[in-house]
Amino acid sequence: MKLIERYIFRRALTMFLATLLPLLGIVWTTQALTNVNLVTDSGQSVFAFLKLATLILPSVVPIILPFALVIGVTQTLTTMNTDSELTVLNAAGSSRMTIIRPVILLAAGLSVLSFVVDNFVEPYSRVAVRRMLATANADLLSSVVQENAFRKITDGLYVQVGGRRGGGVLEGIFVADSRNPAFELVYYAREGAVDEKSSALVMKDGEVQRKLPDGGVSIIKFDSYAFDLADMTKTTREATIRAKDRDLPNLFNPDPNDPVYQGNPLAFTAELHRRLTEWTFPLLFGLIALVFCSDARSHREARVHPMVSALGSALVIRWMTFYAGNSAEDSVWFVPLMYVVPLATGALAIHQLVSNRRLDIPMTWQEKLSELMVRLRLVRPTSDGSNAS
Image (cartoon, rainbow, N blue to C red):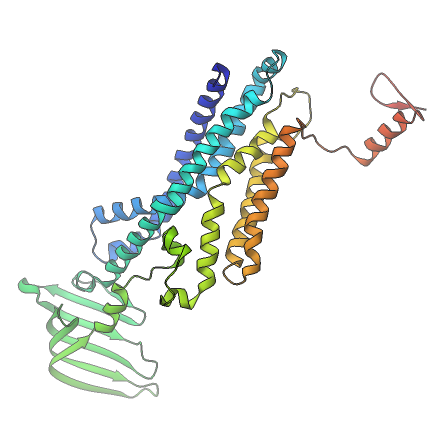
């Protein structure tokens, strides 16, 4: 690259990183906080939370990259135009490709990075997150032994423990089970323990109260009672690996006997085509940014700020592809739309750049009519820009 191209590349890269890091931090924080209660309630350590939060990062990087690039490029070129740097380049005889080339190189590099993250890093991290959450959900012992606090094990099942002695002995056990709509069960026990081999809560010296919908209550005392948790533990420890969690070879050739694939095969098709199109968005959004701000402009020209125009266009295109990708899980007819939108947008942007056209605010109908009348010599222009008969 030429010296001026390296200068533009360096400024665009710096502005891109300055935009990416705060955006990534905000999105990462919001995503991590959605799982903080689950991790803390199951008794996990702070290191487990940090690991979970780190594994979430690859899933947000491909979404943030294109928008950070749009903001970085438009801000860089708009600042250069404000400082008359683009005007100087134009006056010195530099072609528009001097500005376009470094931006395209940056966008192409980010597209390659997005492809690698989207197809190799993100599936691994998604599987790790699901397994970690499944393990946290199934860590019943850690949830139960927290003293003097009601813990929700699952919908309709709550447990409270008064205290814990050595050897894993629990004191003052209270269990409320309303999972069966036909009756409610309340267990009280003086002590007990969790049998990890049989996944059961063994309670001793207690009673169970059974309340019927008509208000009747029956009480049964017991010396020993095993509260079975095996079914719930089994389902929570098995993480469901969905289409978004699969790697690229698995999406190309899914196992026909896979129950997840059998349940919704279109989800695998939609995810495959999403992987084949989403990585191109940094390059596409780079072209959009160039269309709006790669030419030198006078400060007196009326136009919408390039960042607003470029970012608004990028949001509309991203929304259209999101809609097509989600709808493709229900109908295969939306799959072509996932390719048409980026291809058509890219073709229009390239045509605009190659033809060296500028985007201007459209004239009103009155201005168009006045211009036509001047061209037809029906009126003559005056010195102040208005038309005279």
